[in-house]
Image 1 (cartoon, rainbow, N blue to C red):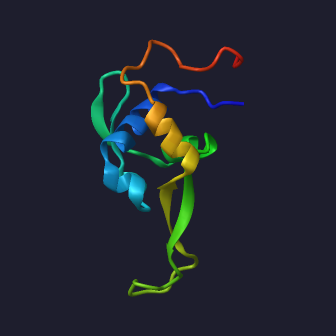
Image 2: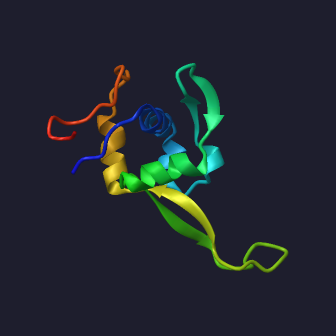
Length: 110
């Protein structure tokens, strides 16, 4: 089943479309700045936004370094970042320039 293109997902995809750098390398959520909400003020992506994109299959969590590597202290696990998937690249390419008043989905979705 195809994921629904909500306003938040659309704004995040538009931001990714505008940033070649974020599409090519792992990035932190706070690096993804998009026009959020109906007022369109610029905000950094939050955990729920990234989880929504991950749930759609457009990004995935990837380890950036092992525990304690490149850090002056011990950590309990690897440092994680986000990376655009192949499906994400396809969604970015297909993302419409304007968002309609409701969620954009195919005819089969409820």
